[in-house]
Amino acid sequence: MPSAPTFASEPVLRESKADDGHRDFPGRGLLINILRVFHIAALAGVSAAVLAGGGHAERWGMLMLVSGLGIVALDAWANPFYFRQAKGLGTLLKIALVALMVVWEAGRLPLFWFVLAFSVALSHAPGRIRHRQLF
Image 1 (cartoon, rainbow, N blue to C red):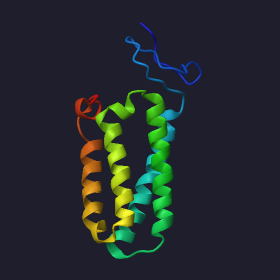
Image 2 (cartoon, helix red, strand yellow; image 1 turned 90 degrees about the horizontal axis):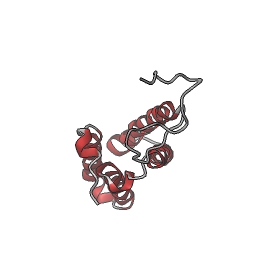
Image 3 (cartoon, rainbow, N blue to C red; image 1 turned 60 degrees about the vertical axis):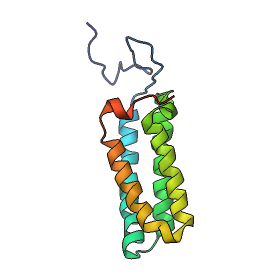
Image 4 (cartoon, helix red, strand yellow; image 1 turned 180 degrees about the horizontal axis):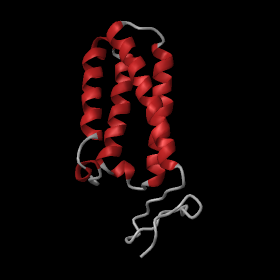
């Protein structure tokens, strides 16, 4: 029985009983968590801008975009099927809706709430839903 990996012996590519093509590297989980912290902080800033007329919407939006793209890039690299699964397609839908929110001022508030609710529902859905391969 293999022992748990240590920092010194952790493999670059994770070992899997079924070769599912998933990849990993030491520190990927930590890096994604750091990006999530920035992403949620940016969400708070964007929320303040949209809901209360707070300032710096562009800066918060840019931080949200950069951190989100970093998370997506790492997830897509680690999982070759990412954009064929519900979570990957849901992410593409969220990006499209956020872009629509930027250009459609009249629909900004309802889109904001929809994207927020959709994001929470998707990220907290059971794995069998998030990882379902849609095509």
